[in-house]
Image (cartoon, rainbow, N blue to C red; front, side, top):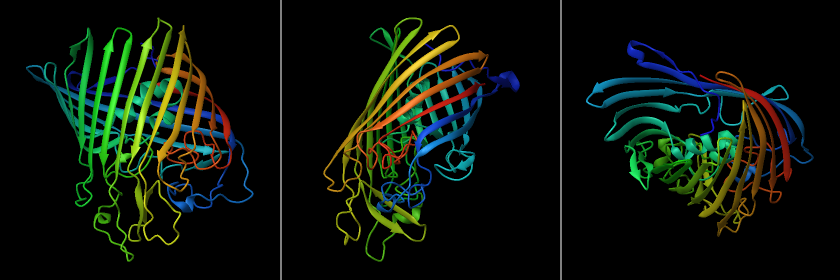
Length: 435
């Protein structure tokens, strides 16, 4: 298979190489067109699902800006041979990142440099047997996000727009994962995996439940990855990287009843996704994927004690509604891409399409919009573990207005706000070091 980055060199240490340190560090600088700085009336951290986030400041216009970004993620692993084919292992990993717009630090998610505060990418232990499979317990990433992010999205410059969009979840905190051994099927290798997470078990009325079934089939030059997620009472949203915990981050919202009688409602989201990559020859690889998203919607409820407001695909047409209702919705997204490798160079191109949503909601919440994101780029293997990269990208929305339902924000993935501009472009250059 074509490599997504230059070969990394793990640092093994401890008795018999029991511990290992791997990871990556990346830094980029770019020029972004059609960027609207502080154009929303309320802070950008307010969910686009809430009506107060719809308004933009009159007279604001977009401009071209300079961007910088860095991120680093180490993985500390440990393994111990128990004998009789059994191996005990553990994995710990966290990600840090930061970015600037025209030299000023920006915050697009939470506070600080920890990627998702209060959540680990990996913090788990596992036991594995070569004939029986494996069991892993703890905090871990989902296959719905991690496989879509890399190798599929990351190799093509669309890791966020493909991996972090849609109705799925990306991080688990209280999970158990069962993996099969390699199975011989149809003259190929089949791997099966089932993951369960009970989320925040302090929620009782709105008890969270998460299931993910993952399958990978590998035959010759073809790899097929399939993921099905079904989540009940997670946070309503369209950020495929999101942690799964509960309807809100606060268990006190489970029993909350407002003075107007409003309560937080349950949620139900799922995705069904198939991705494949095929090695045409030693130089060319093609890939693609399709994903169906389903959301139950969520009503508007607000708890002043923790200052949390819920809502997804809400009908705001009745100004007298005590708790405006959320509506069910579904959509289909897909991507296509290709890579060409010659010597130390790898050239790539990709397209991500986020489709319209089907819903009975009479209010416009972005269900009629689409987004097409294209990338074209090159990577150069400069030295062992070090790769230089350059990417040009563009986005085109089907219409001006709220972004498609598969996008968590109105300017997600491209920094081009769909309420301000129907299209935008960017160019970035940078380096990534894998260790």
